[in-house]
Image (tube, rainbow, N blue to C red):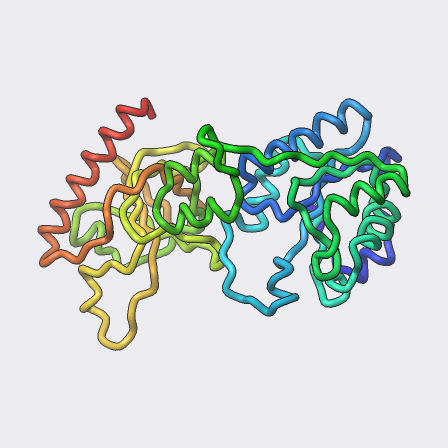
Amino acid sequence: MEYISYDYFINNNFFNSENKLSYIALGFFDGVHLGHQSILSLCVDMAKKDNAVSSVILLDPHPEIIVNKIDNLYFLTTLEEKVRHIKDLGINKVYVLNFSEKLKKVSGEDFIKKVLLNKFHMGAVFVGYNYHFGYQKKGDINLIKLLAKNYNFKHFILEPVKTDDGTIISSTLIRKLIREGDLEKANRMLGYPYYIGGEVVHGHKRGKNILSFPTANIKFPSEKLLPKNGVYVALVEIDGIKYQGLVNIGFRPTFQNEMISIREEISVEAHIFNYEIDIYKKKIRAFLLKRIRDEQKFVDTTSLTQQIRKDELVARVFFKNNKI
């Protein structure tokens, strides 16, 4: 990944050392879902066929943060996660342009001509059917078709990818499903299980000391979209190996009375089945497969422990039935 400031970008050329044309996929690609994957895979295939360099240009931060001063956006993927997914699909180059006050004023035509053609030597562009770009989002697929004729580059505009029932897959819809806790449907649209990753940090040690269920408290990125509070069947990845488990997302209401003046922040805690090794400070990922219940406040820790045992049985049946 190359992170490029606007001023650096203006004064430099990004022609690759092989002097090949760049075939460029454009989009915000939040989640890199099945619709995005179709665009990116076509870019990879056509670049190989035409001996070009498959590339993606991303904008960071999200344009809404600069244009409309919105600072509470939450995403399916962090920038690092997004780049990893994109590269896993075979894209050769990922460029991240710092979206700034200067860049937001660039018109759609200038973005094509001065950015993509002059700087990145674009030979073909790949976008979704509803792609908009440039100042005030005035650029669209019609402008791309027109400029493709004027400046002699190839263009590939992909139709929406749909589910079996005809629903158009989109990042907006997936975010809605995740907020509602419908991970099964969201995962089918993503093409992989939604996950929350981060470093394991010390919590209050209640899981091990009070409940006899050791848990890993995940320090997740602030911009990461969290699902609806509750308990989830999950696979927890540690050092590249996935283990069966449960994940609780919420405010731990059973213990909330312990806080006198400060309400506990939302937490993501993973209980990994039959795993006793200390993973403090390790980076892990919790892949959420199914929401099984709401977060509840129990009258005492004994009741909570009994419920966790029931949750584990539900999870183990899920893993067995789905051959996981």
